[in-house]
Image (tube, rainbow, N blue to C red; front, side, top):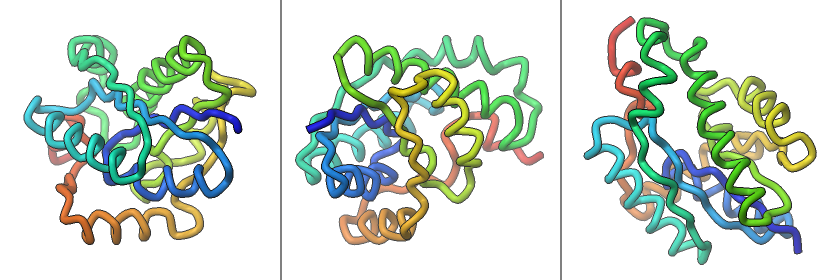
Length: 176
């Protein structure tokens, strides 16, 4: 059975993604790495949900370090950009690069990300970054297909999980 490391942007988004990967015959472990999430209280809420979803899905989870300073160093100069612009691409790359490095270090066959489940994210851009970083180790999956987003929202509602109303980035909370 091939092993895949799933970057988890938030626990809610992991629900349908884990289910799909398991249905396709993969052994799945989660990787929660999101230095973009602010404030720290928001990060803690999302981390808690990720742990609970992993438990419900009988999936192990690796916790990446919360290095907000690294994220700010990469993204501060792009703080005035609107949602979906260059700042987001830098953020995706930072998180997918760490996921790829962890995939290699822990000897997974593949890695992928839940970021593609959101209808608010450009999956093509995310998948292109993943392919550039991981080449044949990147599973190019758009999790919003096959009602992925709808299914994950239904599961979140069923379990009464906290669901955020912004991507996590402090700059995304600004009106542009």
